[in-house]
View 1 (cartoon, rainbow, N blue to C red):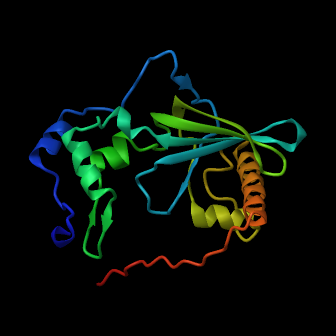
View 2 (spheres, helix red, strand yellow; view 1 turned 180 degrees about the horizontal axis):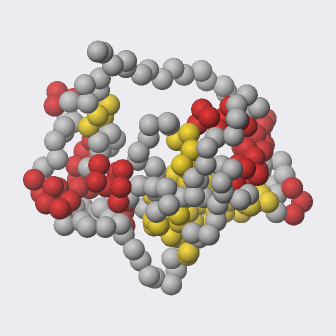
Length: 215
């Protein structure tokens, strides 16, 4: 990492800033919307602990749908030009090696205080999109909101269930309306995919490597 200009360790100034952070950010500005009642859920890798995105959809007349994507508002906790921000800007990403993962932000933040964790109230930046029946964008908006993750789900099990090749993942059936909401999100995703291909998008096959542990 050092040979490539990356920093494996957090500097003392960053760790001092971290020690001074005792909880997730909360804001009471009038412009911050309260969207905790929506059927937000995260869909990530099975072992992911840093949940940075939630989604929810709402059916609208004429086959249209409103899709909301919530992105963790890390900036509400990690201030611009702070030592923590400076370290994150230098590495630009978490660095994954066979021996160890070097997180862009300390795990106290990335997996807890800024993570959109299950049944936790968190600040987020919400991108709201209204999509027509053919998947084309009608209008969009962006704003800050308080959100609450109703279900922590995983890619593989949700995909198998939606494709009819697996049982309903644990956690979906316990939340009223979440199963249909996920199916609505999937229908919108398929419309967006079809529209992208209509405009010349390509299918790219990629491989994700996963190191195996040794006994």
